[in-house]
Structure formats: C-alpha cells, structure tokens
Length: 383
Image 1 (cartoon, rainbow, N blue to C red):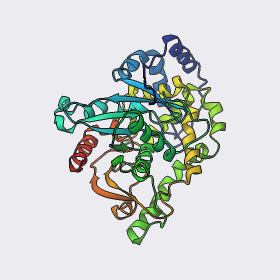
Image 2: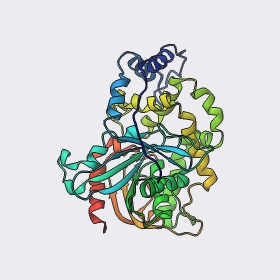
Image 3: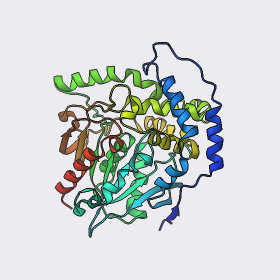
Image 4: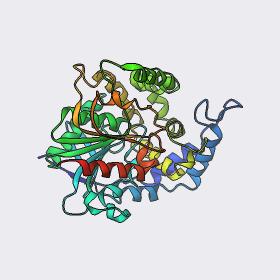
C-alpha cells in the first residue's frame, strides 16, 4: 500500500516578507497610452494590485483558509502527489476527483469543496454529497514535480492510481475544467470502469476526422480566429518553457501579471473589471501558491507534455469516451464549445447544459450553476 501522510501548508511570515520586498522594489516601466488590457495585463491595475499585495493582503489568513480542509501527500510513480480529501456527509457519498488547470491551483476549489461534500450546509440535500478528492497536478503547487514534462494523459494515470490504489475507491466520478477537463477525459477513456462517469466544463479534445457539416466547420474556423491572440503563451510553454522560467522565477510581479492576464481574459467580466468576478484576495492567493512553492516553471511543463503525448486528438482510431459524460457549456469559455454533434463523436454525452453566464474558471465564477449541474448529472447515474 502506498503511504499517505498528512500535510499542512506552512509558509513563514519571513518568506512572505521577502516576496513583498521584491514586489515593493519592482522597477515599473511603461505601456502604450491607449493601453487598457489590449496589449496584455494593464499597468495601472497591476500597480493597484501590487500596492494592495504589500499593504493589505494577509497570506496567513489565506493559508488558514487553505488549511481548513484535510490535506495529504502520497508518492505515486515517484512523485509526491498532494491532495485534499474531504469526506462527504450522509451514508453513501460518491467519490469525486476534481482537477484544476493552468494558471489555477486547488485555490479554485476552496469555496466549492464544501458545496460538493456537504450540500446540506448550503440549502441542498445530503443525498447529493460527494467524497471530494482535489489533487494538485504534478508540478503544480504542493505536489512534487515529474523528472521531465508529462501531459494530461499521464496525469490521469496518476490520479486513477490515487483514487483506486491509494484511497481504495472501486469506482469514482471525475470533474474538471481547463487541464482538468483533459485529465477527466483521459480518465474516462483509459480508466473505465473505475472512472464511471465524467463531468467537464471545457472541450479540449478533438476528433481525428475533424469537423463535419456546415455548423461544425464554421465553429472550427471561428475557433482558430478567436484563438490567435491566445496562442503566444501556449506556444512558449509548449516549446521552450525553460527559457520563460528564468524571468518568471525571479519576479513575483512577472508571475502575477502572467497569471492575471488569463484571469481577466478568460472570465465573464462586467466590462474590463476583473474584480466584478474575483476579489484581490482570491487572485493573490492563487498567485502566491505559484510563487511560494516555486512551481511556475514546472507547472508550465504540462503544455510540452501534451505535445509529446500527441496533442488534442483523443483517439487515432476514432474511439470515444464511452462512460456517461456531462458537458457544462459556459458562454464565455476561452475555448468556445463546439456544436453538440461534434462533442458526441468524442464523448457519450448524456447531459448538455447551456449555461446563462460564466467563463473559464467555473468553480470560482459560477459555483451555484456548476454545482446544480453536477448534482443533476450525479442523480442520473446508475451506480
């Protein structure tokens, strides 16, 4: 049996103070006069956020919030995998593994885990409770790093081992967005029947035959146009992540700006106001996990790893994920959803929900919409 050891997030005030000193001494530069957010992370907002960072942000409070759950580590394939394990209420909570992505961390789930594990605390039914397992992806946050880049398929292998061999669940459900959507897809594809069903709020996978019919072809063409301005970070992290790391590992402000651009650009905001969705504390807590754990570099490796695994194509043979699959379609998702017909050639889609609002970081942006959809899907499953 793999040993499981308790874990606690514990960074000293001295470590935090050293980071704050770097932020305070950052040599501010310039941006175009007509900047806004069009050229990247807005300079005026970065100055505002950094001023809050060093004067008002309380990492110790955020750390206590992270530690309100039970944390563990377990060695799997030579990597120390960190995970939250929150046992659900009631007599028979179903196991659920929830996977984050980049530039996220388990911070995405801090206000979502209790909804999943203890719905009765939030006006829900105890019968909808889950045993929640929320791992940090290998190379991300509190998990150890692989010796070289790995992609979402290998991470799915690791998470299946975590759920079955380490935690002893005979079967489970997987949920995720961003890289978590890819990991959940591979869990359903490679690890059924242990992975009995998946719920995804992103479409990252592709069918080998490409789009078929006018509607799918139009979606694919528009998708490529929409992604033009997003491809820079993907290409860099997917081809030469090490070069990027030398700048980022030396600059807390650089890490913050790189991540903040995505939180702003991928979310369903009111105008340009990132704080219409997130608080400064939420943004900085997620950013600080990357900085304190020194994992900006190793977290970027997943893009390189996916390229080595074969990219977005699920199956060269054209097989699909046959376990029941729920698709939560948020309108401001960075990767615009295909027509359902295309998704159904990749997944056994049994639930398709067009959400009224929300973007890429669904568990943070629209937790009520997401939880209702997960509950509905779970009730439909034969167990």
